[in-house]
Image 1 (cartoon, rainbow, N blue to C red):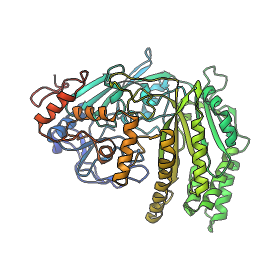
Image 2 (image 1 turned 30 degrees about the vertical axis):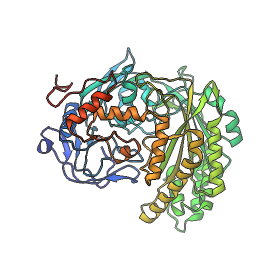
Image 3 (image 1 turned 90 degrees about the horizontal axis):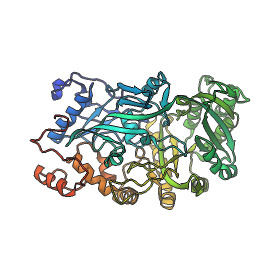
Image 4 (image 1 turned 120 degrees about the vertical axis):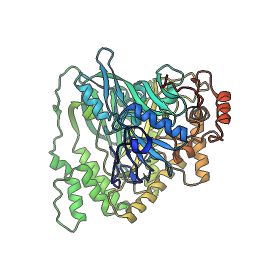
Length: 560
């Protein structure tokens, strides 16, 4: 349920803690994200077994004004699901039921603790699948949607575009369901867990299908000249740019509904797996003094072993990147497999990662800014000698109607109306530095180097391209000036004032937030004023389509 290496004990039942029957950690334990870059020590971690128990926990924390942060699989690189100091966490991992698969309407209704791979497995038995995926299938559906996760495909929106309805346990309003088309849907679908805990979601599905994946390696000039056609002619496309090497790995995937090629067929690489891995193994042999057998290590593990030796030496990183480029040249070919296998892929080991998104024109008329961003970024890396490992990953999506999605088309003046063009093209670019060692000093040095690397992107490239960060990868600003610049960048891109009003209405005491969110997306002032003052603020600020908020003596929506 958690990637929490230092958590030792789960205590149950919750009745001993808060009066409802659910599992919980009732003692302080450290929870760590997957990459080991962020941690928190919650006062307790709830693991409700039913959505009713989850809603009851939210209600109790609201009534007591006690912090409660919803979290998923703790995969977010920035620890987005972690609680503030002294707060509790609520994990929906035991609320993972697949409630209904409707083959006629091609929809699935699930509890939001279900993992993506569980949903895919249930759909597979009904001849269905999800339209697009992010790279990791271990995400819980709640986090998958709330952070604005995305796959790749210029005609496909981020994963929030597959959501038809959400049922949420809000602190002040109780359990409510919003459906696509409701004025609040586009604000709540990507809301970072700050308006309510996601209980159930209904997702649009597509027929189960195979994908024909083609791996090719282009030069940078070829990638620039062919990019627009690649995006138009392929359902899914991603580029992996390799710093210090004139090589761009292009991975495309297209459906094979005609069944001409069956799973596992295609045009396999001319090289065996041992021949493909040979460049990395040979480099490792020249760098090591021992004769330890590395024949069982896969590509990502070999790269980690190589980088571990001197991760911040530019000359060494260049050699590793060159070996990786040769691996990909020997891996060119075509393979066919189920879409659920092809749209999930190896992301490497523990790492620092940052990803930004920016507009790149329209699919019918691309601006070319997507490739130019990469050429500018590579120019900075190579001119300044940044020890940047491969790859720099580039993906594309269509626009999103979600107000806080980095792929949203326009800021929009009217909260109740969404302006979106599905021809709009959005490019996503991710940079990385791996953490291949457990040595605290080396990890600290890599962390400092990555922050400098990211800051170059933030200062030099993002203002020019109108880029904003992926919500699961934005980090706590380093100082007040940095915080002011981050807040301005987000306010220029998103309706942050409307979002603050909505947050205060659904969560007047800010129990669902944390320090990171409150720093980059400030709440309205006086969030902890008296109930009377808070109610008057909501009444004056509430848009007409917000639901009436209960008073402490009124029944909640889920109590009626």
